Length: 110
Image (cartoon, rainbow, N blue to C red):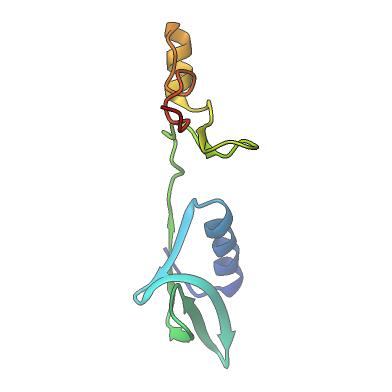
């Protein structure tokens, strides 16, 4: 959907930054900030150093990654490890198998 409403775009930018379920873009690239100046809609493009005037921005709703197998985390005093979460871990537990997270894979130990 296309929008010129600054309040709506700012709300979606917060969602883009913290939840990742939406994306705001324009023909120049991905939008990271928006303002209205002298009646013109202005956007800041990711990686570009100044504001650009645009007619409207495109708002796309994306779905979160539901098939995440686990998160890498850093336990105190150790290297990166896989968090025992996700569908692969749950499926392995139901079958009575050891999941990759409990068998030592991905913990940095060889």
